[in-house]
Length: 248
Ligand SMILES: [Zn+2]
Image (tube, rainbow, N blue to C red; front, side, top):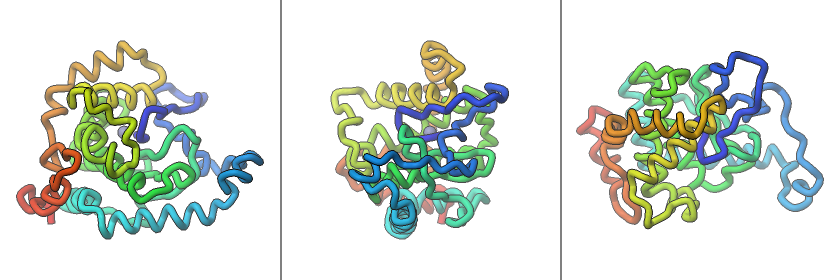
């Protein structure tokens, strides 16, 4: 499931149950969007190869240096779902509304090379999507089941966005409202993520389903084992203690 609020999926003439946001990743359908002239002029959006190279370098750096990405890698490996960078992580051009996503059909994380340009942002996307990947691997997750979807989005928001990563690592401090209760932040984020993926349900329905599974999923901190607080050593400690959870 894509990162951040605008996880919309374009309408496709298929069963609405099948909308997983694939249309957000036009490269998957061989239709790379042509940059508008002003994007080329102002942002160099035409330099797709440079973008892809930078994106892949950032992904590689995260797998080398980010304790949380390495922890998720270890957790996935210990669960029998080892990641091969070339097979499971893809840098692609996306619809400008999303920064990343998880494709459950291909078991692949998509990092949007035209949006996620910093290592910190790539780290945030990788950890969020790797939590979905972990849930899919470990818990037989059915992404078409909206309760399952709500649960994995709660977990991803809980373990990352509403804590350390949103403000510090993802370079997205404005998203993190310090006055907001942590649980409320997780709820808000999870509802937005569910709505983005499932345009066929209303905001009230999304809120109801998030509320229904909230306590159980909010308290499920596997595999990170703690909510990573801002400005703390939690991220490093979580990685160092990975042996406690059976991950090496
Ligand atoms: Zn998600």
